[in-house]
Length: 107
Image (tube, rainbow, N blue to C red):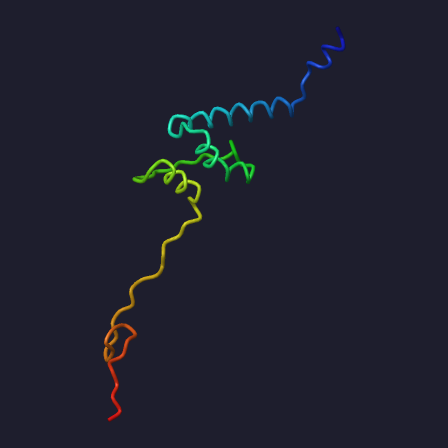
């Protein structure tokens, strides 16, 4: 009887770990509504599992257009994307285009 009581006692760390697991499972269930396929859900949660922040962070995303897998790819890369800074160069005076010169004839 005493042996069973000693094994049933859980430390504070175990209780905290169980609470964290319950929170994680509750948050993961929310993904089931939007992404019912298991492989897509795994791809979505992979960055969080790799960095061991699953259940610690709240992620809110607004995505428009594309398919389901495209949306998952966009969410995975959220925060890593930046604006493409390449823009069209303006035309300079004395040039045919931005960099192209007029044809030059020596004679």
